[in-house]
Amino acid sequence: MGHGLIAWIIIGALAGWITGKIMKGSGFGFIMDMVVGLIGALIGGFISSHMGLGGVGDHGLIISIAIAVLGAVILTFLLRLVTGNRTAEL
Image 1: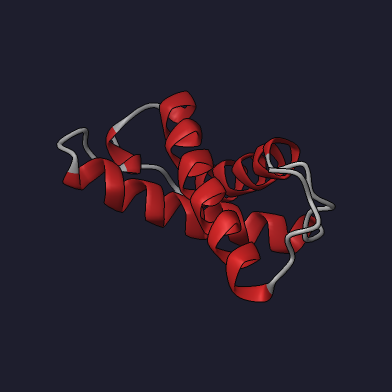
Image 2: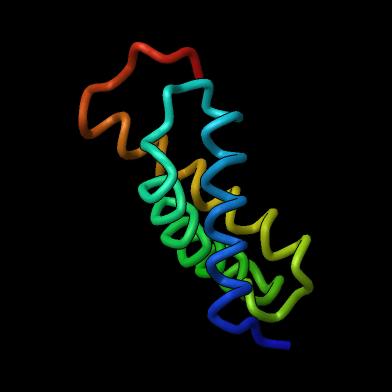
């Protein structure tokens, strides 16, 4: 079951918002949180497909959001390592 463009926007927005709450930072703003969520969906889908669990589009909306959040958390952690923004408590 694949997701359409609107579903990907919803997944990205929710994943970015949830990641902002999990990582206890100030966030990147709505648009950048959505971008982080969408890129996180790619990262999470890559990781889950290589673990044999299937990609983001192979599951329902809730599982897709969970996989996207996992990828977005990883991406945010790496971004904070690279940019030196370590003031937030992880």
